[in-house]
Amino acid sequence: MQKNLQRRTDVRDRGGATEAEYLGFPTTRTFEIRGFKSSDLQTHEKKVCQMSALSADQLVVKSLFGDYCATEYPGEDPDDVFEKYGATQVLKPKELTTEELSAGIVDGDKDGGVDSFFVFLNGALLNPDDPVLKPGDPALRHIGSHPELEIFLVQSKNKKNWEESVWEKLLSSLANLLDTNAEDTELEDLYRPSVVERTGILRKAIKSLAAKFPKVTFRVVYVTQAPEANLTETVRKRGEQVASLVRSRLTTGALVTAEHVGVEALYKLAGTEYSKPGILTFRHLIREDDDSFLGVASLEEYLKFIRNESGSLREEIFDSNVRDYEGDNTVNAAIGSTLESSDGPEFWWLNNGVTVLGDDVDSPQSTLTISRPLIVNGLQTSHVLHKADRDGLLSPDRLNNGVVVRVIKSVDEDTRDRIIAGTNRQTRVPGPALYATQSLQRDIERFLLVHDWYYERRKNRYKNQGMPAKRRITIGLLGQALITLKLGQPDAARARPSTLLSRQEGYNSLFPENMDRNAYLTAIEVIKSVDQFLSTEEARSILDDYTNARFYVAAGYLILELQLKNTSDFRFEVNFRRLARPLKTTLLSKALTVLATTAESFQSTHPRSSRDSVFKSSDFRRLYFQELTKTLKSK
Image (cartoon, rainbow, N blue to C red):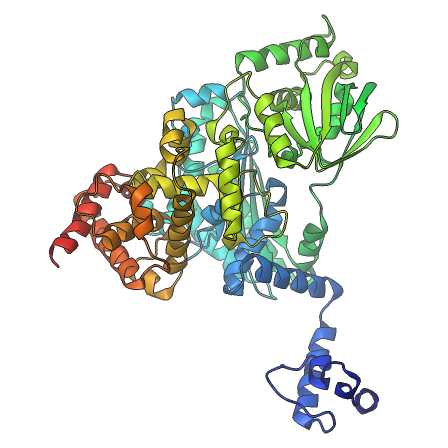
């Protein structure tokens, strides 16, 4: 060690770093070129020993997690960030947005040992107010028989050891949280509202989808940075007990697993690339020009293209598609009927085909290698093909039938938007996704980009470019901000944002062509400032209920700051100019305090209403606004 130090003397004289910087000592301390203190050497040697004790996998995972903290959530508590990191790795194929990920994380006081909870139906993330969760809702008619219901309960602990307590907490809580007969109001006596709401998605789904006989998969995953080799038999058995408990609360045939994801598994997950190129072999291929191709591929080859190694659909290649899978509608039923029969004309004679976008396309002869493939038209065809083959309903004779596939190479956003809009006019289209292609949305994206906000009209576009989570904005979040600040309806922003955005008149009320683009910037900055405030200890000491509070506090702040005596019309398209930034902490605190006292009062007079139903109530919203205006009049 001493010889190495002597060999690297006079570094500063040669124009390099100081010895302290070279060796990795804290840069806040000043070292002379010669003459290190023994304490400094001992500290460094201790660090070297600690580093050498880590395995190669641990070193890589530690580095990757450090990068994730620095780029995605700089300045946040690493333990909190690890919850997001663990869930992100486990759910990697799902490619959730920042908002979707945050909504599923429910960790906190009275969480019942549940860190995060996600429910997917046919690959799509369910939210607490999805219409398919209501028995008898017309939306259920679009869900075919035996839909895939996937549940992920992820426990992420930023520790280097395994703990029995992680499983033991779940053993004591899941019996209650998975009880379909439990009332939300009863559960809220034991658990925080966010836990009750998120697990409630599953309780409702089990009831509403019962007649569809869903295929249920429930994964309970314990993620930590501990080596798998250190996993004890006791911890493993506790996990098996949790799996057994969950299995007893679900329908017969449900696949339930309790998994331990340690540093080795994290290393593998981190190195797994789900957006790898797609390879599609054509029976007949026409190259129109350098950037476009048209051909017929066999159904067998097309199924290989849309599936991963495990035989499941590559969900990430459908992210840009603007149409939801509509289950057993008339068109899909007709496709399914054709596939079951070996008689009749070729499949491609009866089908409009598929359109695929790619960042790059390599085309040696009849095989295309497509970089970052995105199916922008053909979701229905793809799902019906996959489902028919999976369920044994695809006639073997049909595997050699063809499907028409168009492949277009383009990274230009305007071109992509025109292709998406132009190829999705035939059937019902959910509004928000198709609106993303409109010129107004592109204008908003460009305007916000000037102010260092990354507006993800297309799912995870800026996430894939490495932009920080705190600066990324989805159409859904901007819509919720406008529902709150422009329409003055935090209850609707909390409960029914997609319903309003999906209607043309609702969309037009939120995104009028003539509204100043600065109003959109202000709406985002207000919501993000509220989010930051609610994460502080001061806010948590007043009301620790981020999910329910965020839109109400934003609306309350606007009322207090602008001193609005008439809360029936916020006139945000004009009044946004009066909202100075940064927001005033005193007014944020006041808005939250009034919200806490109003919620307590309202729930005491409505004891049968759950916490979440209170915040989704227009009656509660009106009472909250009244209490705020009283404080203005008392001045």
